[in-house]
Every structure is written in C-alpha cells, then in structure tokens.
Image (tube, rainbow, N blue to C red; front, side, top):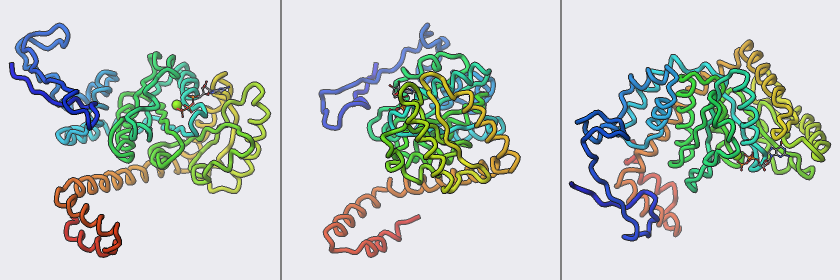
Length: 370
Ligand SMILES: Nc1nc2c(ncn2[C@@H]2O[C@H](COP(=O)(O)OP(=O)(O)OP(=O)(O)O)[C@@H](O)[C@H]2O)c(=O)[nH]1
Ligand SMILES: [Mg+2]
C-alpha cells in the first residue's frame, strides 16, 4: 500500500518532524461506514459533487446536501470554483425568498443570546431559520464566534434551524463573500429568515450590511458614555438599535440610554431610504421585546417593499458583490505571481529605507499589472 507522509494542516510552522501524518489509500471494498458501493474507488467519496444533482437535493431541503453545498462554495481549492459557480447559478431562481437580517454589536452585548431567543421565537412561529456568521477573529485566529454553539444550544437542536459557523480561513473580504454565498444556498434550501452575526469592532460591519436587508445594532447601557465608544458610522448603517439586557436593576439605565439614542438618531443619516431608525429595549435572556423586534422587521419589510427601497438595495448589493469578487480575484492573481512577489519585496525595502519614492516604485510595478 502506498503512503504519503506530510505535515498536518494544523502543525505550527516551526513544528518540524515532531508533527506528521500519513495519507493512506482507502480500501476499495464496500464499507459499512462510508456506505460506498462495493468496488467503487476509494476516492469517490471525496470527488467534486455534481452541481446539478447537488442543486436538486438542496432544493428538496436536504440538510446534508446543503452542508455539502456550503462546503463546496467555501472551498479554496481552485478545482471547486467552477462547480461552485454553477451550483449558485442553478439555485439562483430559488434564492431571494427570505428576510436577511444582520446582527452586530460590541463583544458581550448579547448577540448570540439574542439569536437564540429570536431564532427560537421565529422557529416556533413556523419559520425556518438559518444562522451564519462573519467573524473577523476567525480570520486571525482560526477560532469562530459560532464555534461554540453552547449559547444557541436549543436553537441548534430545533428542526427548523440550521447553524453554520464562520469560515475560518482567508481574508475578511473572502470570508464575507463565502458567507453571502452560503446565505443564498440556505434560501434555496427553504430557509426564510437568515440571521448573520458579526462582531461590531472592525470592517466586518460594512461587509455584512451589504448582504442583508435589515441591519440590527445591539448595544448595552454603559455608564452613560456608550455613545462615545460607538462610531457614528456604525450607527448610520443600522435599521434599528436594540439596547439589550434591559432587565433587573439595569432597566432604568437601559431606558435612559434608549431615549438618548432616539435623540441622536434623529440627526443621523438613515441607513435605508424612507425609514427612520428606531431605538428599542429588550432582554434577550428573558425573551422580552423579541416579538416586538419581529413586528418591527415586518413593518420595515412592508414599508420598504412598498417604496421600492427593498429591491433597489438587493439589486445594488448584487452588483457590489460582483465588483468585490472581481477585485478580490484580481488581487489574488496579481500577488500570487512569483515575479510580483520578488519585485515587490525588493521595492518595499527601498521604499522603506527612503531611497525610492512610493510613486516611483508603483511605476516600476505598472508593467506587471494585468
Ligand atoms: N442580564 C442579561 N444578560 C444577558 C442578556 N443577554 C445576554 N446576556 C449575558 O451576556 C453575556 C454575553 O452574551 P453573548 O450572547 O455571548 O454575547 P455576544 O454579543 O454574542 O458576545 P460575543 O460573541 O463574545 O461578542 C452572557 O453571559 C449572557 O448570559 C440579557 O438580556 N440580560
Ligand atoms: Mg456571540
């Protein structure tokens, strides 16, 4: 039996021979574990799924197929790009039939708890809920905010819910793109409320804003200075602000913060044409304010569909994502070229030590641009 030795993906860069794994050929016999038919090649199970078949199974609402479809679009293997694109095209006529809700907020504001309460509320209303994430920390550390599903334990078990952790590799833009594609797949599988969680501390808010219909900012009442830490920019992306943890002795502070926010919001640019962003209180832990949140989102959808703002935004978002994907691809291809890397390394040194003007360095790179 031929075997191939290699470093496991998770070994540290300086791990050396201390880490090793072996790739063995599978056994070409019927296996009760894989369910592979007798005589089928061992690698068949890992082959690229046929997009048309996968699309059909996703449309049937087959969860296993949905998970495989998401794995296909998340894959960084170049051989998976064309089948993933075909799959998304095949499912295009089935996507679009959900309300896409983005949820952002400072760490610890209670986003996951809110998603658990709100998600369960929707599931019990007969909705099918998918939860996705764009997690900037997963990009840096390989961890994921949804890696521990513990705060969404009950939701994760509900038959109307589907929870998918954030992709854990690649640049933030790439991760966000894959989340958006997963969102379309979930819609095609019949999920009609999609919740996308992100931590409101960086550039991820803008990326999530561009994939959702309704954007919710979750805050907590601080020591009266919660507005100082909040960037006005993030508030201007929101279609509603929710002051969470409005329970117990925190309730009066939450109410004060809400009144303050309402005043401030009045002077800000609304995120959505024709919609005045409101501030509300809730307690995700005690499920208070949850039905009201859903009522608010339905009101938003009704009004913006009537005014045309809803579909106008979706159209603009599609174009934005084409432009972003193209930019990513151009960058990726450019920087993957060996000649670019070596020239750039050299130019960076000279620019760094002050012997070359950045504009002159750019001029030297210009012939290498596509
Ligand atoms: N009193 C009270 N506590 C809450 C409420 N919602 C969440 N918490 C608590 O706040 C803590 C953080 O909640 P999470 O839901 O993990 O917050 P998060 O925003 O998802 O946090 P990160 O994912 O780390 O950014 C937990 O201990 C929750 O139990 C609430 O409505 N009231
Ligand atoms: Mg969380």
